[in-house]
Image (tube, rainbow, N blue to C red; front, side, top):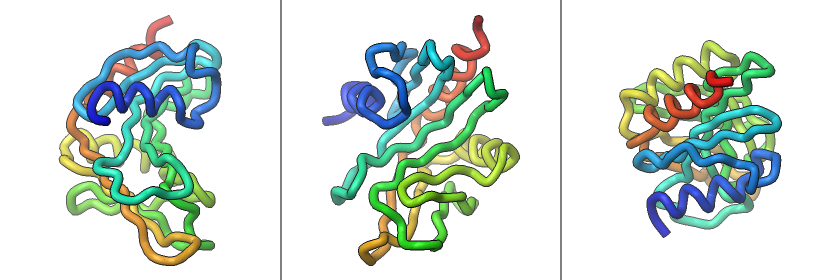
Length: 164
């Protein structure tokens, strides 16, 4: 399954909380979709890695979210394909830039709002975003996200949450 249909299905089933039927689609831009939730009020751009080469423990995705009530803007969240191994690093790469992420077993985030901003700036000019980590059951896994449409989806979600 490719394109808009895959993005819409993925966003409606991902563990971002809240009922999927309350989600307002804002648009599909290249490989990224943009959505708004009314309660709690949040807006986000989201994508799945492409191509998905191997199945994992989870359905991986990357999102950039805005949570106006919490003063959060353009926050990165990555759902990893598999549980990562212990305290091993999760790294996000865009072009020649590398960003260490703060990670739980199956999720990862930028270290702070400054890092979120640097990642979003890199996404705007990059072609691919790659997330890599060591798996709990051995081996390394890599998820590659095409960035075509990411900037527009991020802008659409930012604007949607700025409106009252």
